[in-house]
Length: 328
Figure 1: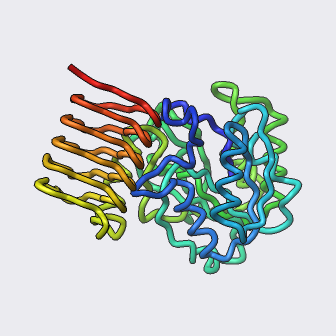
Figure 2: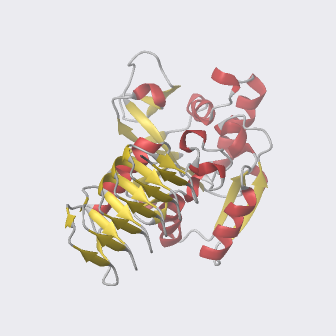
């Protein structure tokens, strides 16, 4: 599981918080994937760490004490193939490779149903912004024929989402080694998709698997959208300990334990984490961290860090933990 990235698109929040621990609907993004893997019966995981590695390892070991974790440091951010290559010494059987920049909703049961003739699954989804992804071209049998990283032309809109099951782990790592030996691609990176292409070129059948849901959390606007989607379901609602007086709540909202709201309008698409206090303010499509204070403000599409104090602000804001802003 590659976790070494700096999360530059989510700064200033990721200056002190690993990207995978940014929260949506009150949970770190990484925890959605970890919960799925644990429920699937995965007991051993390899974490490729780098930036803020100590914070990441401490969180994993505290929250998932029953997972047998191996931590490998990626000193140079040289791409997805470079990251996965570091896991090879720990892999001696089938493997799930997952990039936890998003919340996935997929049918993991497809792993058990995969035919013996197939070497793995690549979960994929039709997208419009295909230039951001590796896109898959299929053959007449529906298997992967080509995978092209970040194409400039719409050769396909079937994008791999960063979640893979590989049964033939030996051929995978042969492909990874071949990719690294061939030299870097765009922006000096080594792409894992080139290793998948190597597998197919050497007879492997990789099956694109349908994706029921894929919600990106790798940049502020998509993190806010993902938060809104998730709180539309069972992760939304108002905790019984929260105090809401004279305020209009426009669903979906998530208002956590010990939150205080006085006046104003909250929602839609707003999460107020534990102990936050909001007075006389309007908040729309925003995530407010624990213990934050917002007064007399009108905010939309904002991320407010933990224990920040915001007064008399308007518009869209992205402020790190323990920040302070006071407008005119």
